Amino acid sequence: MATVSSTPSETLDPLDTTVRLVTPERIAFEYPLAGPFRRAVSYCVDMILITVLMLAAFLASLALTLGSTSGLGPALVAFFVIYQGYGAFCEGVFNGQTLGKHLLGLRVVSDQGVPITGAQAVLRNLVGAVDGLIPFIYLPGLSCMLLTRKFQRLGDLAAGTMVVVEERRRRVGVIRLREPAIEAVLPWLPMRIAAGPELARALSDYVRCRRRFSRSRLEQMAEPLARPLRKRFTLPPKATSDAILCAVYHRVFLGD
Amino acid sequence: MSYERTLVRIRERSFLDVLELALLVVRRRPLPLLVSTVAGVLPFAALNYWLARAGHESAVFWGSIFLPWLEAPLATAALTVMLGGLMFGERPRTWRIVRTVTVSAIPMAFYQVAVRGLLMIIPLLYLVVPARLLFVNEVLLLERGGWLKAGRRSGTLCSGSGVELILHWLGQVFFGIWFVLAFWFGTGAVNSVLFSSDLTWDRPGWSDLAGFRFQLGLWIALAFFTVARFLTYIDQRIRLEGWEIDLRLRSVGKAMEEARAW
Image (tube, rainbow over all chains, first blue to last red; front, side, top):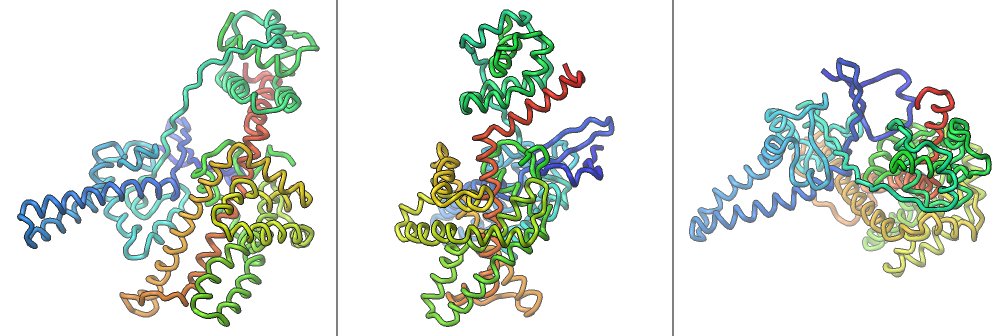
């Protein structure tokens, strides 16, 4: 069973909207959490869909009873079933997602980080009725989210669930850099450099964003990483820090 | 200023992420934020209450909503100074907050009352505020920019993301209205159920807008969005000055120099 990590130093760590779960094998996962604002937007989308479904149920009910007032009864039953059942059904069947959550990239998972069961989906939506519009106009849900570490409303606490953001990383292609200063550094480097994930990510982020910054700022930013690289590959001292990072990027991602 | 030990993790964020981070900031440092908010807001809330008591019902409506909106940047100036300190690991002393707010009071009044008040009259022109003048308070109070420099610097911070910032501002208005109404009706319902043994409640009238619950909800929302605006300001600086990449390059460079990772 995964546990929420809670070390004494955690209170001093920089704040972030994530939760860290540690498995019994001591493997740590960091989940980006969805708080009330993201969830409010997905709730609005779901409410629009629920309204459309209710309208359709009302029209169908009227059509089946040929427009008589007796159609109101089945329509009210349908309203109740749709309003109470929509969230539980979607989250139970579609692995923790309603349409609104899918559009916002959110997913309900258990607070251990594993997929929710059908019972959890039903429970969080049933208890969730207290968090909603009636009787206290979202105040219990909002207060509860503010007070819990994982932005859980009452329904989440009852069912042992939380809502996380599914990270959709944009795929960025390899950037080809053709600048004389960079090409002058390339012959000093080996044809291929095997970099670890940290170095590869740092180089990739740097090259992707370097057009946004001035030349002097680039030099300032690149210097701390260019310094050890300069030593390791005995690069010429006149090579700029920016050119060194770009050349190493070239060798890491494009090779020769 | 060092961004290696900060209150929030340095990374580029989306608008909704910034709002949720603001909640975490409020939860981590409730007391200093509450004290600086109350100290700034109380004089303005008292003034509004006094004006509302003297006014007609229609004046109560406009005064209860638009006066706090106009006053908010001045009322939350102390909160902004407090946030600026907490962000970089210090807790500003009272005299420093008072001095900073006093020194910046006249340029703040010029931008936030005169310029903003004029722009408010023409709704379309008011969009200039989120598009160009959003961070005037942060620049005046935290960067100690002069009169002209503050406007220019705020414009620079907003440049390239004007439309995005207008949309963020509209989002804040939407969430703000939602929260204030929820707080107003919700606390009314709680009040009726717990203290009046009454399961229904009266339909509110305009005069209730000057009442304690509505005003409290409004000021909570305005203070919260000040925290959110401060974090948006930090986010803009992270993007424009490359703090996140800078930190990553430093961390990898340090690890390489210590020959731990390669």
